[in-house]
Length: 251
Image (cartoon, rainbow, N blue to C red; front, side, top):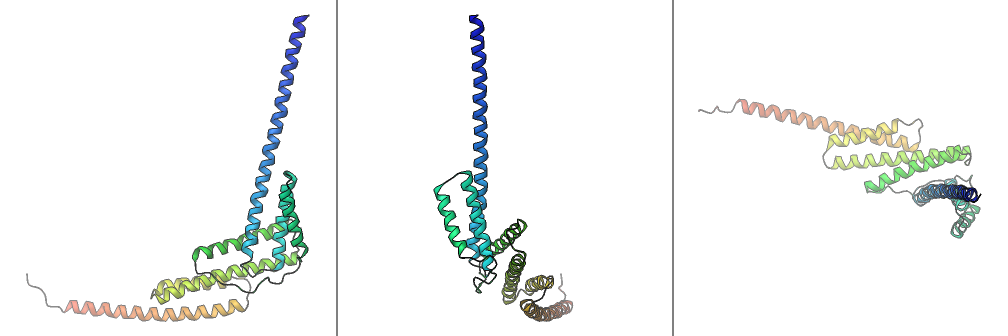
């Protein structure tokens, strides 16, 4: 009888240990999942807030700022649901106050000023930021968070700005190459700029004006290259004649 009780207790303790282990493993899995969710939301929030900082350098619409602020607020709310925090609540409140002063349908520009930087790294950073802004806008539109009119207006604006940065950078490089007497390189830059303009499926004042000025620059470069090639050909012919009529050396 005693042995039966002891064996039963041992079995009971083993079952209890297994149950406790299972509960602990479940809690650990929940904690890992919670931390993974939090890390995912935090990374997304950092990207959105980085875009908010970059957006101030671009002539974009107020509705685009509202989209980004709304997305940041949503991510903070998700983070607070996963891991409640007074800091999250305060930041959520800050975004609520901002959003109360914004109109998601207002597509008017936050600024009309825009200056193309001279540093190539800054230019690349700007182009990447514009791509990310368009991606964020598409994502929010797909989620039903952005009105179709706002999406169309803002996406077209970002696309034109991206084109302008690319074209103006190529033109600037073409001008620098031309001033350095590197006519071949200058022509390549201008040709690439012209192709970028011609590839657009719309036309506006900027595209028309730039197509005309780039075409004129290409005509000038083509003319100068012809003159250079003609002079080079004449010089080569003259060198050949001089070599032909040089007195032959006696060995």
